[in-house]
Length: 108
Image (tube, rainbow, N blue to C red; front, top):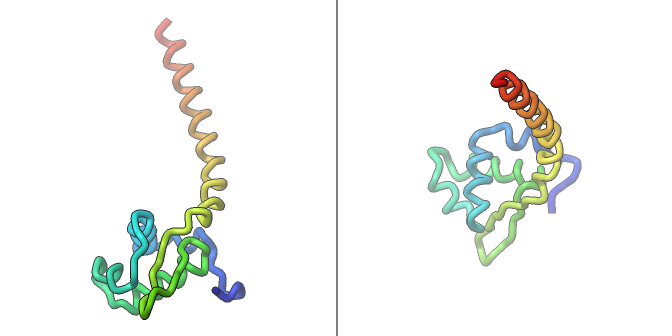
């Protein structure tokens, strides 16, 4: 388990492009660090640090399988982000509806 005193914010965790790429990779399959790190031009230690931040933000889970640690996307961790984005989705839906109404009324 992770120490909740060092819990990272979901928004801080996804701010880094490497961590966003890690989330995309882990959405498909559970993977060990050795496989994950082979996809990045950085050390395994650096990849592990990124994974630790994602773990502490609740975006991935880890599980020991023999001598390796495997990581998997934890989609429930993205709910906070989804709720935050929902406001902006409504904003754009309203703006696009207003634009559509304006354009259609201008045709007449």
